Length: 112
Length: 115
Image (cartoon, rainbow over all chains, first blue to last red; front, top):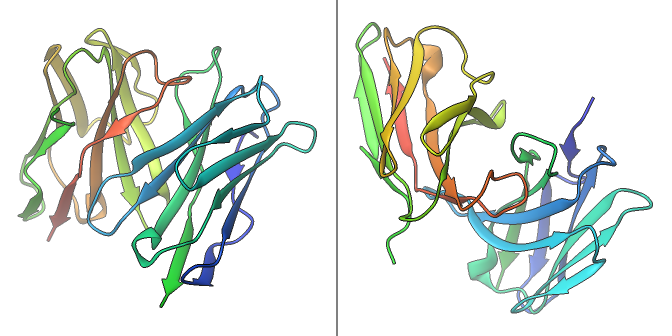
């Protein structure tokens, strides 16, 4: 069936390191992908998105990479800070679909 | 700009009671989504509206759940009667388009506890 999953449920890094959070998707028709950050007690917060006509998109300290060949998505966070500690979700969508499909989430823990 | 506003932030009630959750989407957004989040099942889409019309309610657990969107700036999710297994965080989100290829913006949720 169609699903969005994550390779690792938790990721622990040191402050200042770069973080890479991975996501696999199974629907080859998906053409839109989003990363969200969810802090404790808050709703998911939009970080960055990418459409299938691109393989890389950069934001402030974040980069999303899309590999359509292997249906893989990653979020790279440069110089990770304690404030980056949160649960990160990927989500996929397509123009023919009804709504975004969310993965289970990866917990990122940043230690000082 | 105000984001998606949900109320109440917390709700504790006894089973069998009616619960009403409220959402005000971002002004100008024409799609609205209700989600439920639990540790076991993650983030689940319950229902979504486009231009105030329910488009997909296949995620609504059962007849005890109902949702309305009487106008572009307000929606409710009602549970009647409530059960302990309904305990979860309920999120509302809105987007400019159908949401499947546009960012959805979430509120901070209602944490619901049914005793």
